[in-house]
Length: 172
Length: 410
Ligand SMILES: [Zn+2]
Ligand SMILES: [Zn+2]
Ligand SMILES: [Zn+2]
Image (cartoon, rainbow over the protein chains, first blue to last red):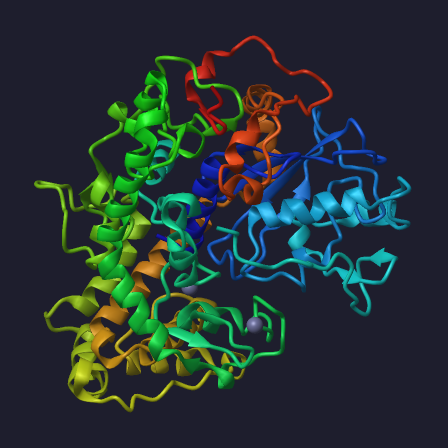
């Protein structure tokens, strides 16, 4: 069994046993290739009352390589209007690219994205949304993301955006 | 695929939360967690530390560092030359693996003893299911009903499981071992894996895997040539290797001074050279240059991790080759299952997905895992509030039986 399968199997068991953090729900995990989770931002934020779905895709190298993560855009779900989220659902977040760490998990990614949304004060798309969306590869992992301090453009020198503050073992 | 998933999940997954919480068995969960690698979450295999002090399985960190030269846990700069084996941790892991079944049994007996007098009758019914984990109904291991068809998804929602939905009695007594592809008694799958696939094999089990497509069997043949004692190309070279570097270099207590293999810059070498490097170790040479480089790279990881094992735990070259072969096959299978065109996939699965979404009803407020794992924190979960704005509490669908409950609220 691929390492990715065994690791995901453990994560799934954890979710089933311990549940997920508030506002995060596992929608489906049909196999060890694609999972869907919903994310809501609780409390008083610009996304009050909105519910989003994240799609995770894993290759056989997970967790050594980052999962491909994007917001679902379909009849039911829309991508949140956020300066780091393109209207096609692609997310510019450093932990999904250069700042990925193999000790992270599906749930910890959801929590990071949830807090990225929670800290947003103004709903707006990335300035280059239209240009990016018209040329974007299907898989966000194929985009070379560059993380500027507050402007997020796909390309040029790298700075971290959403950094992971807590990388720790699950508390037991 | 879904049924495979169910079976995998139904199999015991060894995890720190197998142990009762701190109120019943202080220190056991944290201990079980402390001897696990944070990358793979298994017990440390050939544990090594970086200069920052963080510990990982040798193979895990050797796979991770080429991607990013920082410690995965604390992000301090790290490189392979700083890797040091952690002999004490390896000893501790081995001892704990031996002690764990007894500790688990004692701890769960203790939990059952504590729970006995106070539990109302219906809760005791649940407790009997969860005797192994020794928790109340909230934390109990869920039983996964087998889904009816291959296409049905495992859906996880907070909706209560329908009464009379299939539970553990519907599970097969045996599961397919993901490593050796043999039928193994479900309850013993961990013991089986710990015994390197020797123990607890169900009698008369089907030794061939469930997925035997032609490409795979072709693949197998090529690998098989290496393991067969018959004459012929690469098989012979494997044998030669065993006589040469093989037996003398990787046999258990033969030689404690094994050296790590250096990394190779595959880009600068032609296909032929990489094929030679593989042949040198008795490894197959089918595939394009990328495949060869990947195979050799993985071999170096496995070999070097083996060097980091205590001599008594070291695997032979043949075992390492077999490990490489399994890893390669598993990965190919995974690659095949990965959805390459999610747009088409999503379209095709739109109806199914809509149902899934519907089935995922507004969740009752589940405290973060952290809160839930604290002593008695689980009792706070009943401060239920629907957190979805739009009430999707639609009529139960036909898939209700396939809905797996997370919260198990009563
Ligand atoms: Zn590991
Ligand atoms: Zn560290
Ligand atoms: Zn086995």
